[in-house]
Image (cartoon, rainbow, N blue to C red):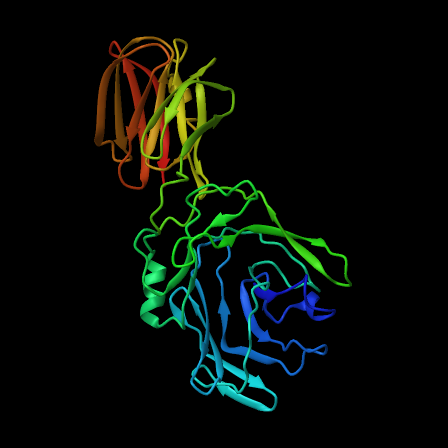
Length: 372
């Protein structure tokens, strides 16, 4: 899930495993993370585990904070926050042990050629990110709970806290070499999406920047460079759509069928954050629709979500009435419509209704509807 490594400079096998990594399951559970020394055998290791599994929720935005901290005695500890909550941990190192607030007698040093990687996998088990990263930042010193809360709420790149060294909001395009430039004290510090290419030495590799995929960022954090655009898509069987327009809040389409009958129409709203859809029933009134007594006894029952659409094949003035099972009139609408125009009928409570369509005083269509 995250790692620190130096594939180009360190010798085998350290260049291939790095000196820090986290074990991360497909379920989102982080079982442990560990620090290895820079010696050839990499031992002993400082290993952090969790009393309760630390879980990064798949298919959702998560806020992750990893803290490295030293005290005046050069002792070390690390903390992990997920979605603003400190994860209670225990650690073991060289025969010693401790909990979240305890210090370990070890001292690590990060060089200028080390890479800090999110979702990059360690060298011996390379995997690549199937996710989205937004608002990446590096703080000077160990973050407090207040710092974590502030970062989680979102920072203003033009007015950063004093102890933010580098901040990438990814609100501008990467440069020609596919790097993003940071804001903050170390303005211009580089971050990128990368893949590892083979190096010359045994187990060595070169982190090579890749052209990033631009997509909408976290919706809870301010940003305007890459807008979320919601588009509607209509679908139906044996029908034709024309003049379809719309946004995430409103829209319209013209729908026509060659024959009278009972149909369903599906509306799908989709953007880079996901999609949702709803299906509506439609019945078409054409010139040949009459209502005979024997037909009324064999009406189809529909499942709807509170809205029914009536399409008219011929222009005219139509009256639509909705009755409940007790025969009480619960809704009524009259309109002069053009050929191919639709009328929407909003049904009431969950119940069975009879919808009757009249033209010039004659019943031209009636259906029985189950509103669930």
